[in-house]
Length: 399
Image 1 (cartoon, helix red, strand yellow):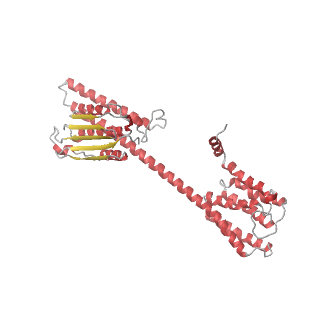
Image 2 (tube, one colour):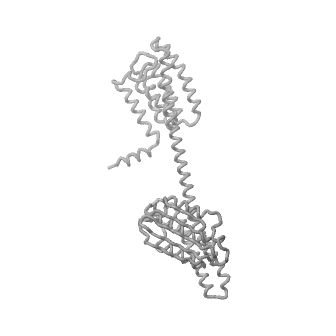
Image 3 (spheres, helix red, strand yellow):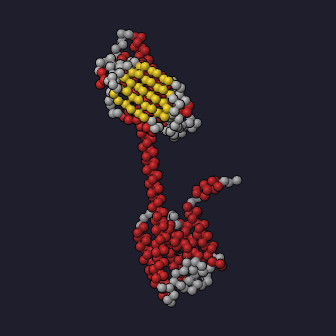
């Protein structure tokens, strides 16, 4: 059995002229009902006369053009107006006269070009029709009646224009929403690329620079080059995974959350892997993790991962050799992260080396990530001259 949804889908797939034709046929059929004879629009107070051959032409002109009221609204209005004029001048007063305000509404709603010219032309044609009806009516209709009927026609056009304005406003709203969505998605992708590329490349650069001074120690040189290779492979894997997310077919059966991050949530032990990678790059890191990550943490796990990742990247870039501490605590309702450097690197640069430089895009991205989940983020100098990043991330929010 066909469901209402399937029937509605089939109906909307039909050509618009096919969907508009039944309204005209309904008015045409109603005009031939004896009970409705002479019950239609009456302008001019002419006596009602029975249908004849000319009446069939008038009814056809009034009703059948409604099939093209959305496709060719100006043509529809011209034909319906001609049929209405014959209807009133001959005194048929059929129900088909209702097609005129319908044609005016459709023209006001769907006519795209020469709208003002169409309105002026219709108004100009109404004047001789009113004069002809006044003369044929032998004084039955006053001038006031003709003047009063014109605003009714204007109101029908205005209703169509109002529908058109609403349709345009809705289309503009959808366009703005689509643009905002694309912009947000591009920003998210750029942020992901920044996090992935900056961290891995920074680690590779630091490891490669260290390798230059290990030519006299083959074993340590081999370990450093192996670390560079491992970092490069992880970077390629992360980039490939991120690019896969841009594939429209990606995600079937993978399960993502509201940010599209479900497939990118770091695996168990991801924080420890980050710490080990940073240690291999020559940065002394103390890592403390309290509590156990929960399955209901939602996006909080990923945000915590990114906070640690960006903070360790900054430590490698701006406080190389400084003692760095990473503390992560998994609570029932939130995850807290604190990453700090003591500002006394091996190069002796002190606190200046502990201050993140660059564009600041990384910290700004972290602040935005945490704020989206309703958390708190801070980054600044510590009393000992180092630099500390703190984040409180509410858990259990999938978006």
